[in-house]
Image (cartoon, rainbow, N blue to C red):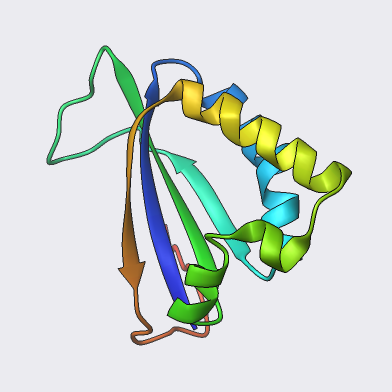
Length: 122
């Protein structure tokens, strides 16, 4: 198993729409072809980078069976075929691209996993 961390810089204030397009349009199709979306987060504070008046930063973590599986999902039609679900995905991807300033990907190979938590004792 591997995970990817996709970072997006999106137009300021567009996270609600960006998330909606992802959750309702893109993710169902990609989950059909075996990707597992672990979550998407809007970065609200970053101790290394000041917030920008031009964009918001969003992070999404997705799990794949292997790097080969990730590579195969780069050609999603070969795995999932066409039809209404693909059309919704394609349309949502196009709309998301219009909201995206830039994006990049990191591969996260398996490390130490934890079985519990998170814990908070106040």
